Length: 126
Image (cartoon, rainbow, N blue to C red; front, side):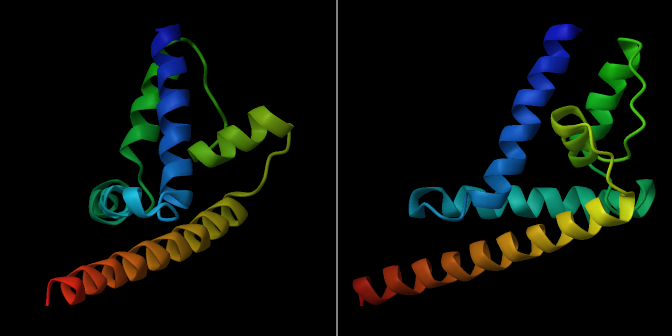
């Protein structure tokens, strides 16, 4: 279980970073947009049943940590990372607002650049 906990930390953190910055390199833009759409589906579609902002990875990770006897006070994975890395315990509102703004900026950038890349590719063919 400890290895699974570590794997969740590695994968989930990498995914968060990829969601935020994966639109920058042209070669990863399509995958980034797909990951952002999957994240949005978890937050908003699955969120209809579990609460808006629901993250499947966080839920699974929390289950692993509970099985290990670890009961984190954090409501989100970002809160957990901030607390573990800095000792600071930011409010739910602050983390959710910041996460939402960063997600919206990354999504807009990814969508805009994917559209621009597609237009450029079509123009080169014509």
